[in-house]
Image (tube, rainbow, N blue to C red; front, side, top):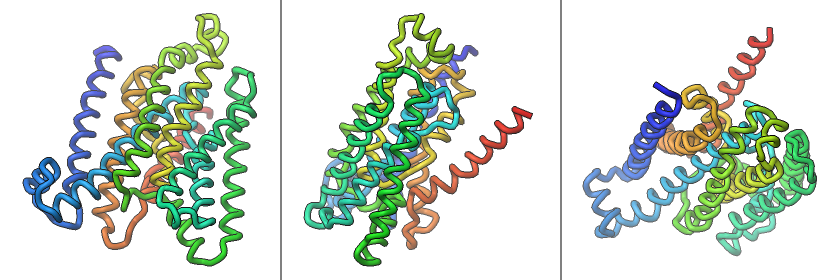
Length: 333
């Protein structure tokens, strides 16, 4: 079987898996409704209590898991292709950290209490500011090294300012609220959050999809790609803006959820043949499936303890990261 045919098969399988997990996310919950009545309430809106749970609690949660997971998976595949670094992931550029800082400032100042959507809007503002700063620091140089260094600088600054806000928090309750939000969760999200973040995430994924041909050429090196007519600067702009939109909007409504952009492309790269243009759609579906599965897991593992989604993805992703480092170390010896 050719790599292209294998990729199509993988994408079809991931599509079916994502659809099944999305249905499971709609049907699993503490309310204990039957499958038939849940689906009828979702589609018809009849049955006040069941319809309210399905349309205002479970549906937004499932949609956000689908969108955010797809954005993280596509961003990770794009950055690993552009930077030609298998350990690259969305947090490397500092956009997620800056988005988290914006949300933390909204919690610290009390704006999130006065205006419910102030928290996601502040996070989006932080992501946009980080993108502008990142592009300014990276300058006009088309290489990937300048982007990595700029990303490290933005990430460090956002992390330091977030720590400063926690340090200056007026009371322990405010600090606790900030910390719990940073752990990441999809609980208690509404359709307002979906309409706020969804267009940004979809636009970000669309921009990332435009980089496929250029990323394929970059596997041969920047000089070879430039000789093939690839505009490296345009590719970098698309990758950064797409990541900012997809990841920033996700952090804005769900907090920090890590490792999906690192793990998913690695798992799928050997199957898709390694070409970024094939890996991108597979990683988007894989990220959506992984986040839907993780959100189902937090509801099933400890339903009464409010296990945070970001904690679970870190527990899964960190050992995988160690394995990658160990594997790379062994290949060099």
